[in-house]
Image (cartoon, rainbow, N blue to C red; front, side, top):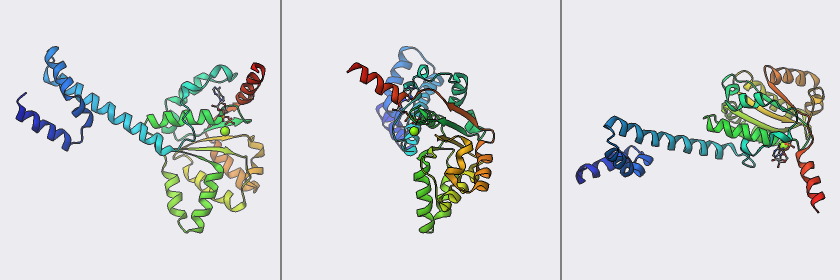
Length: 252
Ligand code: ADP
Ligand code: MG
């Protein structure tokens, strides 16, 4: 390649912000020369690299913005430890189809069974698939909504919560809500109903949700929406945390 052409080409790539193409130009050109690729194949190879790089950057950015408390991808979950787990269902959920269909996923079960881990794993996969995701706890969300209302920015905050493709709502049920908090949460959940997906983890069976939300009519209306067409996964197996503790105890 003539030096002047190369300089201009580099300038163009920079102007177009094609970072991966810039980084791989020499290698791709050499490959094309050595393997006798035609120009279209060369162009395909270099644009492939750019596309992969953009997708990877997007995945990383979405994972950062989702604010997962810990990064726990699905490969780190031991399905052997989760007795009777429906592996077909988790495979299906990992495809992200439920997000396209605006369905919810609800993990029900006692503490330590891996609900947060599974919710995080699905959330991280959603980020890879391009879904704008946010992880929060029910308590944090309730407090944020109350603050937003006090500061008169509630509609803005509600709009933001309506916008995520996937909202992971962890630990519903550990703390009961005030009447005000329950009503505000209802607004977020009702707004997303049939439009956007949620993953909810809870230690409370549906029958006990009145204890979380107080008001029976509101609870019924909320349950109706949240569970409608939802994938409900009961985590009835032993606590993983507890098992690990027992194991450590025995080792000592
Ligand atoms: P929960 O949210 O149901 O209380 P967590 O997801 O916080 O439970 O799990 C408790 C701890 O045990 C976490 O560190 C989690 O990564 C781990 N854990 C739970 N189940 C499994 C599993 N099947 N394989 C690997 N780690 C697990
Ligand atoms: Mg948890």
